[in-house]
Length: 80
Image 1 (cartoon, rainbow, N blue to C red):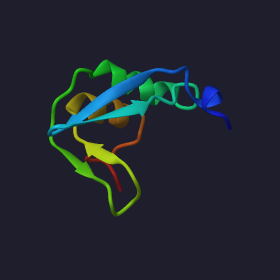
Image 2: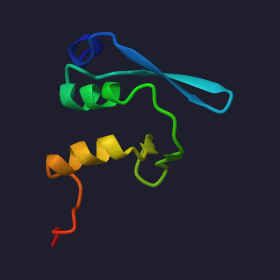
Image 3: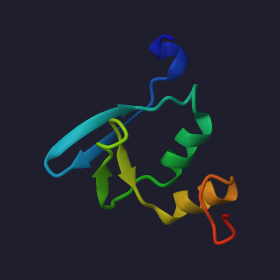
């Protein structure tokens, strides 16, 4: 799959300390995820590197948590 099939060219900048990273949004492949990310920007929080499960960052945000919970992607009190 070519990059043009995955992304419309939208990018976001992520700053950690003095370092800035540029991330391509794969909005053609994951439009709802990209929409959720864009909806909370600008965003500032603590982040963790997911070195145990791949190359990624883990960010906690209450708005994203509610979105995930509404779509059954986050355990709730009723989770078995």
